[in-house]
Image (cartoon, rainbow, N blue to C red):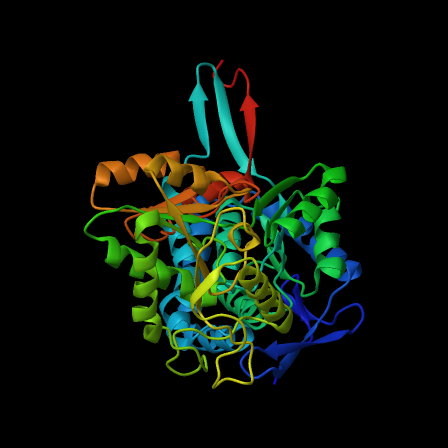
Amino acid sequence: MREITKFYIDGQWVEPAELNLLDVINPATEKAAGHVALGTAADVDAAVAAARRAFATWGHSTVAERVDLLNAIVAEYSKRIPDLEAAVTEEMGSPAGLTSAAQVPIGLGHLMTAAAQLPGFSFSEDRGNHRIVKEPIGVCGFITPWNWPLNQVMCKVAPALATGCTMVLKPSEVAPFSAAIVAEIFDAAGVPAGVFNLVNGDGPGVGSALAAHPDIDMVSFTGSTRAGIEVAKTAAPSVKRVAQELGGKSPNIILDDDDFAKNVAGGIAAMFVNSGQSCNAPSRMLVPAARVAEVAEIAKSVEPNFVVGDPTGSAVLGPVVSAPQFEKIQGLIERAIADGAQPVIGGAGRPDDLPTGYYVKPTVFTNVTNDMEIARTEVFGPVLVVIGYDSVDEAIKIGNDTEYGLAGYVSGKDIDEVRRIGGLIRAGSIGLNGVGVDPVAPFGGYKKSGNGREWGDYAFDEFLEVKSLLGFGA
């Protein structure tokens, strides 16, 4: 049993203002794997005060000092990879293969990218007789989710450290184990006291206190659009900067050409990664209407590839993260069937051989129109809808007919046509012909998928204020 009963504040592990423990459930067993203390506004006050004190020094650190610290964190993170892998698989059910191939490495990738790009980043420029400088925004509050826990923590923390900010992190209380190891890594790397602080808790107890706190200069949130709206409302009275990476219902337009079967199979595989628990998942597959039946047959042929089971073994799909998430997904599947959608693989209920654990059958629906709930709601599970189009122009129209705009995907042999279509999709990140995410490419959304950009040096600007020194060269 993992017991996380203290918070990391001002360079020390400290007792919470009041002890209130929450069970952390292993989604594969449905049993408690440990406990986490839930913080309060008093704990947030202590962490913010520590971050404010630290900013007086860290905010004036040099680029060389920050590069050295990032490299030290990289070294300590590398030592703890086995511990991080075990924690992520236990806390949120990521299969061991995915955890070691992606969940843990991507956190390291953000740290390494920040360290590599920081020396060449310009914090000032001269325009005529004036100097324009970029300065750290100050104390940041980070609220991160459970689905890619190390990715979401490090894509905020790394650029904040790189730009001279200090911070208070609230990781998901559903999956807090890996974040506690991150705090241990930072302590071992010599992060100055108060620069990084960790307070566990839930949204009402800690998240709202971070968003509302008058001494926090910026809040960065990743999660659902509904929760993001509430964070923005809570932050508004203090006029702090708010960055949000929210939901998605991303289109995957597959063109009618010789690579059709390959691209369909690839799109199904991409949808099922992490049991579909990715905000940028290609959850709406758009194909020529005349070939929808062919897609159904391809789905049946690849179904054996997606073994669902114990995430500590060789399974490709583990459980979804929690009982509420499982019930939400089951409700959406059942209503989709009632609406007339046809599950060509999967469907409602657990896999027959997995009576325990929050396991969802990988599901592909045909006979779907874009006005159905299953085509418009972010499922956040291994559920793909297939929608037919009669022309490429119609495909683009359907692709953009969503309140979200986080990601999009286009596949086909004619690269000029693929590029043209990608340029017309209203989303922040477009994958062309199966190319995946890259830590140097900016990540973020249009519309209700959020605002601001994370990843690489584009993330640096989110943590900087711009100052004009007029007459500097006089």
